[in-house]
Length: 278
Image (cartoon, rainbow, N blue to C red; front, side, top):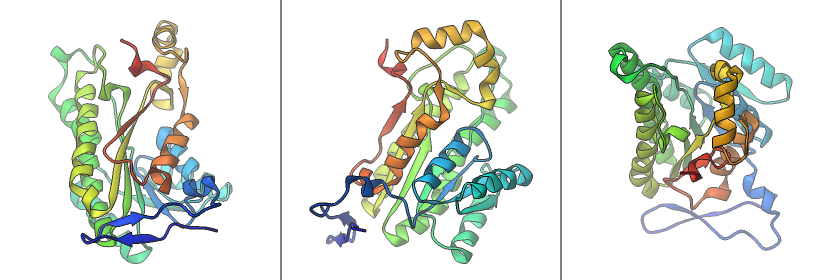
């Protein structure tokens, strides 16, 4: 298989060469030999992304706080032929994140790709929003990106290369009633992505975000089942429907692969066109 051979410039930044003549374009998307950690990946979007990245050749590391759920998800992917690890830690605990990442790197090998997917939602009128819910939401949606991103990036920086994908939301750019703190958290994820790219891009890393629109998941099944809300989603989205989680895989593979070697600090909206409409 043809591969990219890195060059080192005067700042020791890894720069991919132009692809070889006759190289199959699909090889740029091949993740064989790469190892990817996906937080919050026992179900929903995280699980779908893990399966998609494994399908592109990556070895995947599932994460969550519930060991039974993570191990069950891992067995499901292994039955499909994937190479899977389970890493149990709480993404809101910085010390626990660093310990888990450092031990994995020492015992198993490098984490080449990180997908910061863990997140939560809490819907309530802003004037009644509980302070403990606000704090929990920020710790889960924003602090986790830093808590996991920092220790992973330190190892990537030492190697001069790595990919980080932060999962934002359509609410990275838009807002709806009763979810103002969630909107704030996902706006922060978008700007933290830019900051990570600014700090770590010169050190050989690419850090980008994916902002899903309205997707059918277990966590928002009540909204999917709400005829009025689903009608609003269909009317508001140019594609005219909810998204299916598998439709996020292509964006994740692109941002994880050599195909995105010159893409940094970008939030890629995968939303059926919703963010394009005023």
